Image (cartoon, rainbow, N blue to C red; front, side, top):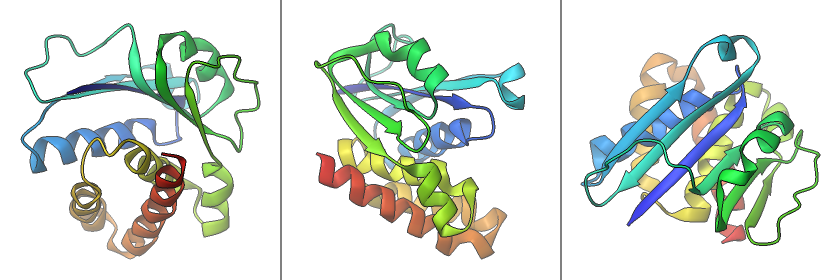
Length: 182
């Protein structure tokens, strides 16, 4: 098994944190191989930001693939820039709160998750990436749910423990959407 994921959005949407949490969880708590390849630069100030995560049962030869099994898109510019990289039969998870362009492919599975709206309803726009991480894990089961929950507790709970309950709730809300879309 090898899964290639591209996560793309604006700087400030937590794209890199989503990829980092997935990669760390996989590396630290499973026997799978993982690579994480972020794209930094002007992206940190509102431009497009993206990262690749590859999870495999075998050693990984190259961290960036031209064709992805899974894609998370947080905004319209990222959709337009990367949609052609998604393999037929792939999963496209979109932030349906702000991605308004039509998806003109019928050979992929589109999972709409209104993460911006949900995060605002929860009272903290910074959890939108955790909601989307939950949706991705719910839809793909690429790693066990419990592995991600433990990583959220260990990584985010230590930095700002007062936000841990909200992060766990955000993950669960996203997971429910992803699992329902399977």
